[in-house]
Length: 280
Image (tube, one colour):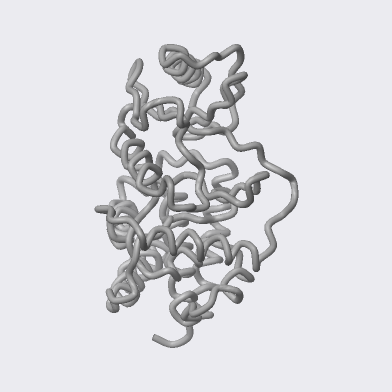
């Protein structure tokens, strides 16, 4: 968020917590992108604040967390002192979570695979109306195919991304029997190492698909420790994920830091991942 919008978001997060009876003497910005994460002290709450245009996503994230509460899922939890819902204030959607202090040690691949397997097991225990992963692929495909939305994308690369997104999404989704609820984006940035153990955050990306779609977001070594993973399917999912990543980078309004580097690097990763998939 730009500085003016960020100030408004901080005020919305603070005011929401105070109105609900929580003590807030200070606010620390933990993360700032299209939505912000704020640590509120001394009540030790993490406020997730998004523009009201993201209200549906925020409500879905709260619903996922609410369904997972009480079944030992390795995820961040909503703050138990307030009603589990999204609060709308000054054109922002605000949700309140228990703040978990990160610890410095890196999560080893075997530990990463273990926590992802436990998360998948917990997700199999809840009933939730979630989108299929192909819905997200379709959004990325629209960005690629609409030249006015990605005007700087060279035509050969546009064709590469379009063919990869459409072809791999179709191939991966043939066998619906493997589908289950997934985190959606369990990359290292969404897995916090805390005193309670590793916990997944950013639950708004929850979707349906094969577990390999989730595994493709994790470091490559993790897949070797996930029992029962289909290696060929994992390679296809990894290529698909890099194609989606690249599609976002070529959007006209993308604001990722070092975007020009990741535009080139993303396409290189797509090609390398496709090579690993082999013929067909």
